[in-house]
Length: 418
Image (cartoon, rainbow, N blue to C red; front, side, top):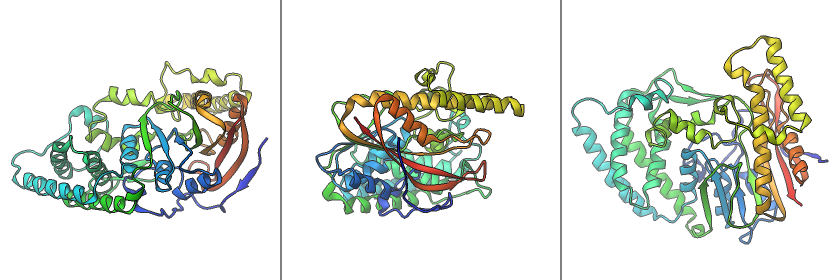
């Protein structure tokens, strides 16, 4: 069927990859792959200005940024509104660096004056918004200052720099203003930030963005576009030559929690119904985004390997006497996740040129009672069933599982459209 190539030696899960430009640091997010991996495969697939690259799970735009830096046209799909904003901004280099800095300085002056002159109670979130956040995500005074700064930024909604200004705000909100920390899961730090120089930190971030854009202005006209879309239902107005992407892995990480604070404060999510609406557009990768109406498992009901894996997980739950609501859904995640992958791959096929390359960065998992899920090889099996050719399964790194204490592979599954 396929063969395995090891690209890099084994490394621990917290090993950091050097990012070759600050342009990838505009916004914090859990990246599934480093930029150099994208570049290596773009070279391997002979990507050029005459090819079109698609990232159907584009997150904050790592693939699209690499494409744009190298003059390669690209398209992305993303269903998380905060990640969508990040990826859209990160490939928009049409702004003038001096202009955005000048606007930011004007906002800085107005916001600083507004904060100093404010009398009375601190600005707060609504009760519905607060219920969406981890308790103590941000202290009262930094939140108050951030909301006042955002009020001034929002006066520039019609300005072409508006989303760049907001993305700088989102990054500083999480990294500098909040009490959040990020490990295997998002949580609240023990030491809370009672006060922060909100406006100055934001201004510095805008200046950093402007400097990054100045480095790549000559590539500003390279086509790149990101669409709000459910990648299980691909719809394009043309043909794609290369796919490079990393879908969520099947585990218990709720990826929406990593962007919850900024999503709420920027107004993308105001209540539980808003959250539910956009979660329904996501690939089912954890128990927190499974719904009664879900039926993606129908696409893989005849796949014995997936059905046996789901059964093994459910039998283990029964054996261990686990009865929580989340644990009862573990086997459903496996069925729905791979059903969603099947649905994605089959809907994508008609939009691929003959012999198009596809590369999926995925990781083995052991989140459910330490039962191993070989994500890459199962994805390859599904692809073969649909009619794709499996080229290689390349191991690009290993990481230490927080649940089993064992090393698990992260792989690049390379397919061809036959």
